[in-house]
Length: 261
Ligand code: 48F
Image (cartoon, rainbow, N blue to C red):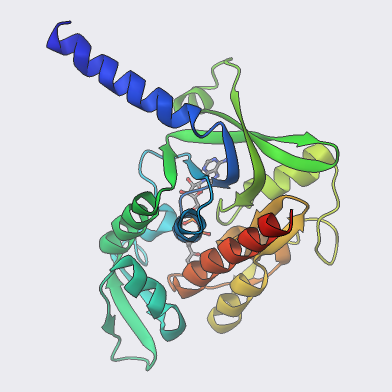
């Protein structure tokens, strides 16, 4: 076989075996932002079959740009052990005790690398356009290539079956909103629907991100800003500790749920 063909064949075979192995999952994560990537790592470390589906070419979500494109992020003391586990460097912020700054590019790449090395699969440039919903339970995801979505091409999707789905889509909580709208389900919130994010209040927002991380409907969890939007928490801006803690909490809840099943 000419080298040119051998290289193409190697890519195709390797990708197809990765996708085939991810068609039935324990946990399907939508969105490769900080909370989704942290959840992916801890779920994979717990021995679960987990994949992240990320719309953009580069996973990492809102981490790359720090605050207003100044590529430094801030994390509070509580989340520092997670940075240590990922091997991401940080230094104390002189301005506020208990807060640390870190290079946003190192954070993004460190979180991606950590999730992959733990055994999670990451599918970038793949958008989740729907859920599989059977017998009053979320059963998986409907996926398509992002360029297909962006160009509005009339191309049918593929599906992934999963015991649980984690919505880590950030501010819009796309998957939970879609599930509530299309499946007409009542979410475990005060209104039974997505409540919507409140304006910025850092201290509350950070706590609420973790509090709002939970199972909102059988088989459907939310982490990070998707959790905060669903549960109606405050916004927190470029502080990322809550996102990391939320991802870790989501992984713990999912592991427990799957153990009970
Ligand atoms: O928003 P995002 O970074 O998620 P997060 O874990 O973290 C939020 C922070 O970055 C920041 C913040 C910090 O204090 O407030 O905003 O909540 O990343 C969400 C990812 O999900 C992808 C999107 O491209 C982004 O990378 N995403 C959103 N919808 C879909 C999706 C979808 N339908 N299919 C696939 N990926």
